[in-house]
Amino acid sequence: MSAVLVLADTHLGPGRASTLVDILGDRLHLADRIIHAGDIISLDVLEALACYAPVTAVKGNNDVDLELPSSALVQIDGHRIAVVHDSGAAAGRSSRLADMFPDADVVVFGHSHLPWDQQVEVAGRVQRHFNPGSPTQRRRAPTRSIGWIRTDDNLLRCRLEHL
Image 1 (tube, rainbow, N blue to C red):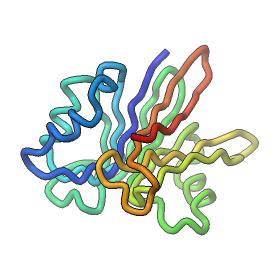
Image 2: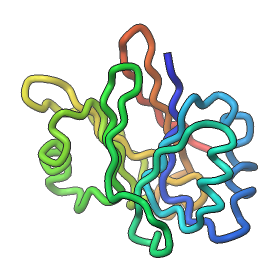
Image 3: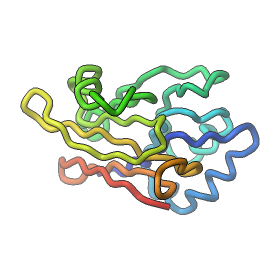
Image 4: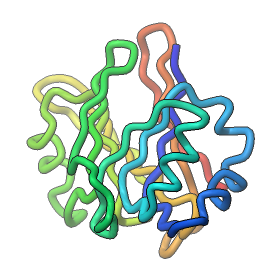
């Protein structure tokens, strides 16, 4: 059983990682792993998160000074979780993500700051497309938000948490 804290679009510059730690508070102690879907801005943020749990992060369009992969695939308790920053336009998103990561159980993405949790059928099985929104900048979303992926008894559950 694992609890994965899912973040995206934190947009915090150097010296501002404590802002995110303060926002997340005790949630950080609940995470067995952390996934960040890009637009991190400063390595300070990843270093602060890594004090709590192992971090998997991908490069966002604003992460010009960070050396990160454009996508990642992690295995957690036998589940395949793909991570990418920008999923492209909302129109056609489901098929595009399914084509990019056909074997993933969940595809985590960011960029829009809009929380999103959708199940789609891919080759006869269910794939989740999951955007945690942003814990720091809600922009057009009703609230700031984060996500959780939990694995219990071989089941995978995704949940958005509004801050």
